[in-house]
Amino acid sequence: MATAAIQTPTAQTTKMSEAEWEARQQLAACYRVFDMLGWSEMIYNHITLKVPGEEGAFLINPFGLHFSEVKASNLVKIDLDGNKLDGSPYPVNLAGFTQHAVFHRNLPDAHCIMHTHTTAGMAVSSVEGGLRPANFYACNFVGQIAYHDFEGVTVRSEEGARLVANLGDKRVMFLKNHGILVMGRTLPEAFIKHWSLQRACEIQIATASMGTALEVSPEVVATHQRDLFKVQPPGGPGAADFAAMVRLVDRHDKSWRE
Image (cartoon, rainbow, N blue to C red; front, side, top):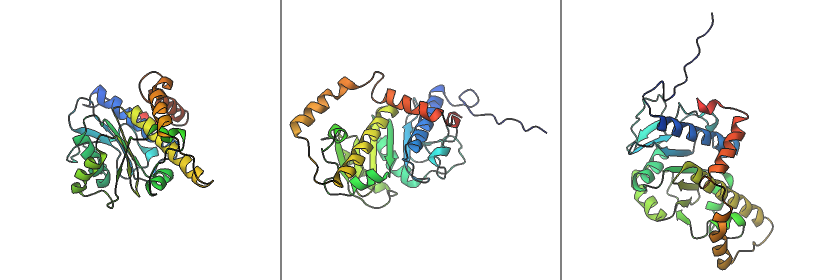
């Protein structure tokens, strides 16, 4: 006896808006890109995205699934108090909710937030001085990185005030002894920030094994940052880069679209 095909949820078959479904697909694609790049961490770490047109609602990965298992339909929609809004059967990691919700609540421009425990990101966050201006990508971030002292796993809401205060007007943060945190006005913008910061960390680690790094002067850093926009492809920060990575993911597995 033939088994009936499973109906994939879409904006047409559920009550969600087209904008939410598009956001779900974009975020699911991002989880698959992160996994392809080796940035997954078992079932931990998080990328969150605000739901367009819904104040206080954002999407987060289901706790218990690997990044490679995330799909548009199994992302969990929650509010700023952690309440599930979509009847999802999956739980939400308290650490992910606590950290991401405080920024989504307090920063209107933090449309997308990414936090990872990559080897390079954790290593640089664990050394005195953090990221140094000693390579091309590191120079992108001079003067733009905030730091927050490690207080243990982020599950206590009272740490939120210190996270926001230490972030200030920056949108990139090293959680000391912990890892990378980046935010963007769009998901592609956050993606290219994370990609560039990860590369900066990897190169800093490689350089450290060779001897004393040659740091770039403040004057050259200023020129570098001024001229970066001249080499950005059209579509907004990170748009072309992210689209290229999604095409690579699609060559192997398109199930994130479901």
